Amino acid sequence: MARNIVRISFVTVFIAMLHMSLVPAVWGQDQEDSSCSTAKAAGQWGYVYTGTLLLATGPAPVAAVGRYTADKQGNISGTQTRTIAPGESSHEIIKGTGSVNSDCTGTATISVYDQSGTLLRTAVLATVYVNSQREVRYLFESLVVFNGTTSTNIRVVITADAKRLFTND
Image (tube, rainbow, N blue to C red; front, side, top):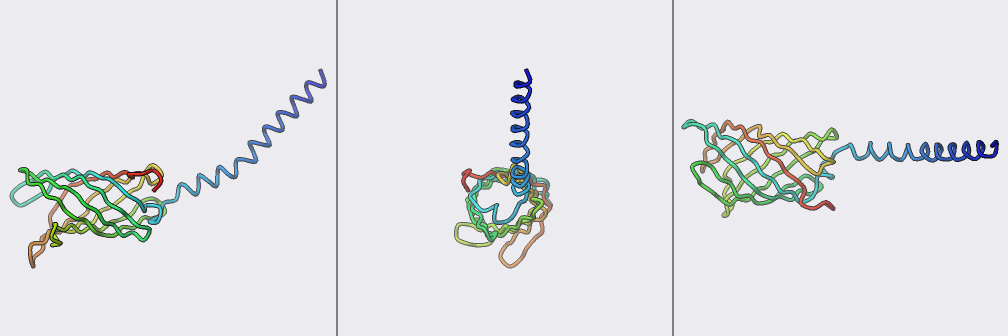
């Protein structure tokens, strides 16, 4: 019986030591994964946005779907298809920059161009990355529409969701 107690005690101590030796590695991994950065946001993304433009003529629903690529320096480029009531649809090019803070919040400034390269509008967005930077939520903070030589600030209520297209990005 004493032999069984020693054997059980030895196994218990061994398992406890094994678990304790793994704790620092797991803690270090969790701390590293919980920090966000612009470089970690690099990759290919797909997104959708919906909301309302608050125009002088009244509210107008707007929606878009698209994809973009972000590099490690925060440069963004891509394409989107956008619709605005009463049914106008257009294919557009997006370019801009974004930055990500260590707390997973950030900002992005996105300019939208038509297919010939004419600047149509610029938006500033607040961002928060979730799910280990595999998803991002956006809130449009401002929107400036360009028409030749003039620009107009448009009030908006628009949110967006984006997901990584590939898990290895």
